[in-house]
Length: 227
Ligand code: E4P
Image 1 (tube, rainbow, N blue to C red):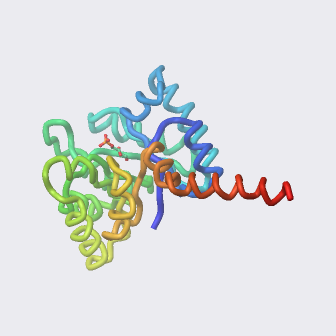
Image 2: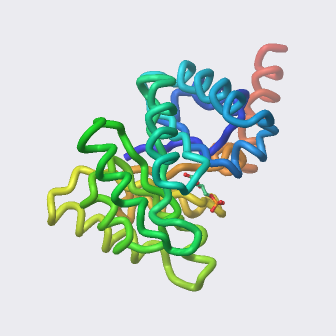
């Protein structure tokens, strides 16, 4: 089981990587925009290469920015060439349910041996099919599932059983964290990985009562020293 960091911020990656608590990083175009990345593919390449270098050999997921079949294939090859630890993210289908994506994913695995993270999935059945197509990672958007009124935990349990029963090698990444509670809950439900926003990861570490306790120790240490 592992925690990935869901960010495009180099500073956040450095901060948590130094602590030894993350085992990978995930990005998407929205996350890169939020991190202030501007300048198209060149800018994505620069930040991706830098993050990949910081966390190597741990994986960095970088998403294709197109849904056109041939462009997805050529872009996937390009992203994968930037660093050995880059995993290419491809959505389960297009914005109108276009079905090219699984064929692209299957082809990239079979012909090019590119590692793929299939993303934007909201159900165990989508993830199961992506795993059958050859995905190395399947990203279930737990927070979005919960926001639709379904409990992500049930989807995670179902998915883990399917992957284990069918002996599929894909690892489950539960993404789209919304609350600190999600992280341990989703790992315990059977996810191999939860990818966590930096602010939530920081919130997992800091506890108000720990602050008070540390303050007490430091104050009393001074008093002991004064004797
Ligand atoms: C990470 O792999 C996902 O792309 C990300 O967690 C999605 O988060 P969101 O649902 O908040 O956009």
